Image (cartoon, rainbow, N blue to C red; front, side, top):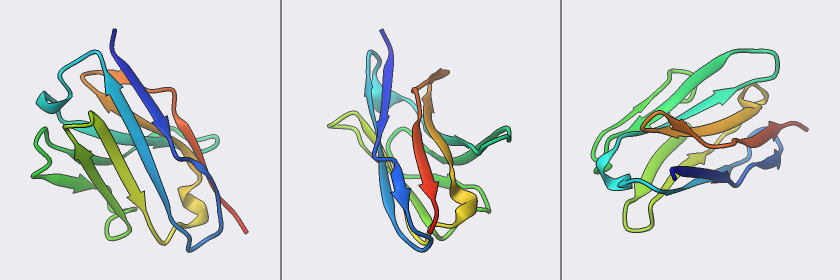
Length: 112
């Protein structure tokens, strides 16, 4: 059974940082590209970032470029999203996605 479990969300002040994790199981994690996608309150899904299977190539939405860093540890079957210089507009539920499967999401709230 494929499982993706996100963690690391929370409440942070503008300008702060958070690191999200996504623990994967039930598939060969190291063989697949992975994505982070978010959904802000009352809005649709927004793709945030993608990393290829070996971690050598990364891609970012313009809205997070220069502030967020995606990475992965294939030995630990874990995907990460380091988020710096957070803005109120980054408030959303963050999901990891891979092979068409999604995690349950983790809430990130940026507020003073």
